[in-house]
Image 1 (cartoon, rainbow, N blue to C red):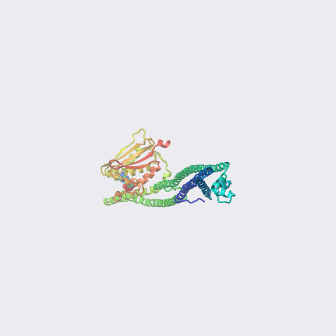
Image 2: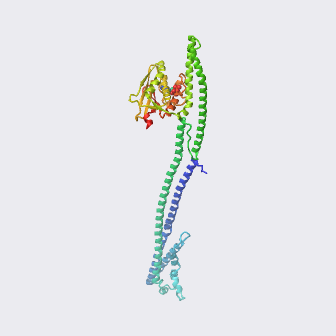
Image 3: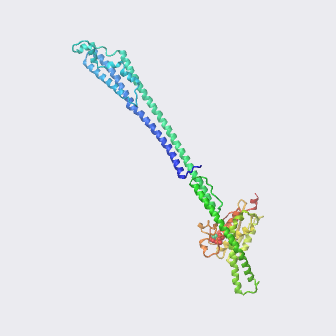
Length: 500
Ligand code: ADP
């Protein structure tokens, strides 16, 4: 089962895909930024504090040691106070450092060792320790007590202590360094992922736009071409759009419409063919009868009778021509399939056509001028004599019909530039055809607004001519002359072109 995806759905899927990639990239960037800000927050709020507090601890230790020594040497109370202040600073700092530990941040184990190892006992209030240690029960004599004080801390222990704190400080610096390396790595990774994400979204965007425009342009072009072909009355053409979207639906509706048009066109053609055939036969016998009466076959007739019979005969001829045209239109398609052209002399064709219309030209006070090909030998064209003659009669007949009195109609032959065709040209000095009507004159039953009311015709002559010429592999077209009137052209392939 094929998935039925309309244009709107295709567009939505593409947008969703595009947005997902874009949002994925942005989300990843945000997560990385958040991680980086967490790391930098740790550096700022924890590691930097540890660095400064551990510095205070070292300073306090040294200060305790110095003041202890001074006190022993100089026996001044003030050094004990200094000692006490340094001790409190030390204890305060280590407490603060230990207080920094949380679920998110674990202190290195070495900090705990500093806290609970043997060093702790040395942090007891200096004076008290020593008073307690004294077995003398008399009130404490500070001088005696001071003299009896043991060294507050042995030198190697102090060094070990300082070393432990320095190690912790180094560990802290290593953490800061590692965090900075992490931030750097994360930011590089973010840039890389961001670039990849944006690159992918641009590629997806371009591919998506290309895919969607292709999936719309292809069927649109097929539709356009199909419409163009059908506009030229070719109802055999079906539009092939296999997509399951709206275009597929339009194409199938269109094909249904074309099939119906073809059916109704064929019914109409059949009807016209039958009708004209049925009318032509009795009409021929009426014309024969009228002509026989005119020719006095059934006895003499007076001038008045002759005059009216002649009018009747010419009207019958006009209706017969019209019926022939109608019959031609309906039969032409099937006839053109079986066309068997033969070599024809184009000079002969135009002189035959001119001969046939000389009377009409004279009656309209129009002069026919013939410009034959002067090549030796004259290139022969491939065609069916009667049909090409009919085209020439239509076009020259129109030129005469639409010309003003005392003007010229020029019938010329031009050899095609490549020598593979001969161009027939019929030029008049009449009103020409307005630009907006030029594309319509070859359509069935088209007659310009100006002539509809007061001139003979049914608008089939040019359509028939077009079909005949196309069936012969030629083209037919017209253009207005630069000064006055218009020119009709049609081409026929030469014998040489056919034999190549
Ligand atoms: P008809 O001549 O029977 O009307 P055609 O198919 O021969 O039908 O011509 C179609 C229309 O083209 C004419 O009605 C007329 O409006 C226009 N036309 C054809 N030839 C000429 C011409 N030489 N000059 C001006 N208009 C023309």
